[in-house]
Length: 505
Image 1 (cartoon, rainbow, N blue to C red):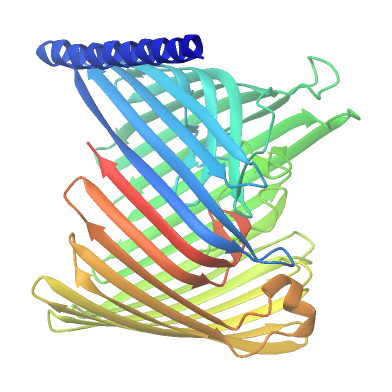
Image 2: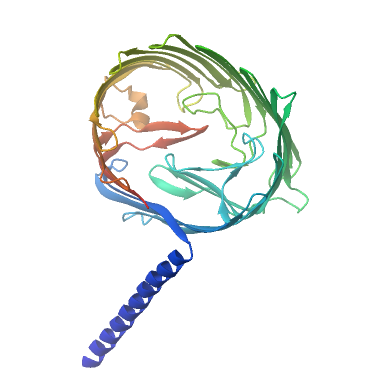
């Protein structure tokens, strides 16, 4: 027994010595690095949920913990970055995700070289769009090599690596693909001025995708195209085209697609007009639930029909300010399949009025019509008037808003309304209370919307210092479909507490 205790104490002493050596090594490293001009910066975001799982017949208390630590070490033209991520869902699910990402970057006036995990978007994303959206919890990245050569207003970029797509849905992080696909790409952007009055931007790109499921090494998929951008006085125009050539997975056979994106804006004193048009025919490429070339959508709410497979869309917006204290805005956006069987029509009107320097009034009217977008609903129409009043008093503010959503889902009619009250001092603290109610839930929609009819959520945001912020949210949330940039997911109803601590250094 004494021998076992001695072994345990000896092992604990060894671990203690290792920790002391590591700690002294870290302190010594920072002391030496500081004297040589090495700078360390970064941030950390820790999030903890304690909630009731309402998906089971019996109530089950769960917790959710995730932490993301970012570190950047800079020395002259060199930068080393690292991200430590850990997520764990409580038992009995035993779901967890742990990864360590890093990259090394060298930068000077002519050349940039990155090795490791990185994000990149070619033009507007029709050929390649691997990005990070921390708010929506989308992490589409590439691990490999990326280089950029800059010379007289031109940039030539090349990359090679393996992608990874992480997505958050139904309160669970999921790796959508197996990271065995390979991406090779090159992108050229050049900027110049014509006649000293017209600013031009021309681009061309080529991306090749190899997948393990392709029948032969020659059965790869390639996407290539170009863009032109013109800025002339009050006018801005952008046009991009992409062409996809590939093969169907498993069965083989040639696959082709096209993507066209056009946008323009005309701005004068007191008025602005913008227009956009897109035509996507089998240009979206990836797998189930993810895309390597996430394409833009004209819908402000972020909804897409099928993310670049079969979409035809446009958007028109006008902003008018007849007086300094009055802003008027209207939007008419649409995206649908080419046969018009599925689609979204979005119309938005906004009137913003400033009464003096302290009072701001905002009235919004949104109309959203969906056809075969939210299963099992065939047609859904939402008309939502929103009124908001914000009062500023020296260093404090008070905000009150009310929204009423009239919903028609096939043959069922119901409505949802909410009151939101916010008050606080910017950059110090803020309190928000949201009370929401649904008048009834149609029986056939109960599996999708649940039987709950009331939701109350309170949130406190406290800037502890310039480097630290703490947010506490407690109560119930309705859940439902939320979208960002054409990507949508279903959020489970929530009943519990969320704590988020964010730090920068």
